[in-house]
Amino acid sequence: MKPTYLAPSLLAADFANLERDINMINASEADWFHVDIMDGVFVPNISFGFPVVKAITKHAKKTIDVHLMIVDPDRYITAFAELGSTNLTVHYEACTHLHRTLEAIKAEGMKAGVALNPHTPVHLLKDVIKDIDQVIIMSVNPGFGGQSFIENTYKKVRELKEMILNANASTLIEIDGGVTDQNAKKLLLSGADILVAGSFIFNANNPTETIKDLKKIMS
Ligand code: DX5
Ligand code: ZN
Image 1 (tube, rainbow, N blue to C red):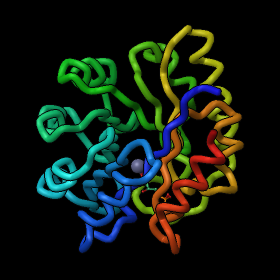
Image 2 (cartoon, helix red, strand yellow):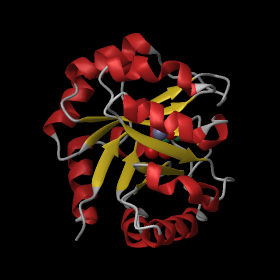
Image 3 (cartoon, rainbow, N blue to C red):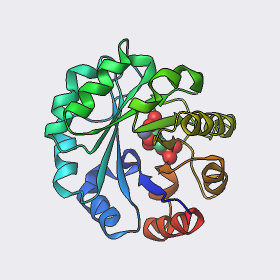
Image 4 (cartoon, rainbow, N blue to C red):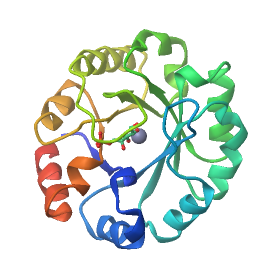
């Protein structure tokens, strides 16, 4: 079985107990930290900014997977590199010169990702697929945690996997939004490599056990 990664989304953490929740993930079987940045313009919500990201990277001991839901992401690439981001993902819909943006992210030593909104077709990435380290297929409309999974996602994952194989690329496929123990296995079988889960983990009675259960499903 190929390696797979579970990335709990800190958007669903208790911000008044952020250090506690980060340490819970550090000590758990989870693989990455997923960090959602929302600007209130690209999406109708504001999450948190640099001081909070700095506090997160100070305590987090695993890969920091930053998902920018912001307009004009090029302005902040260097800042996120300096804060310790491992992966930086921008939205296809927010980039006029996507290839240039991807090169700028990699020049800062980070893995470069592209996220696709539910309405954005996978085929639009055909000419840059070899330049992308990871594609986030949004399985909800970005902006909020706790929304229901959009079923059309499976089809998009299969299409993207085919494109990656045809291009002989090493791009990973990440799924973000509404991930639970009910859809995790089918997503992996469709071609996904990374699953983000926010409310399913943090709203559970025992988040550490929930992470363990998800990892078992993913193995
Ligand atoms: C949505 C964010 C997601 C969100 C996922 O805009 O990009 O990362 O935190 O949360 P759940 O798992 O609750 O759908
Ligand atoms: Zn996200």
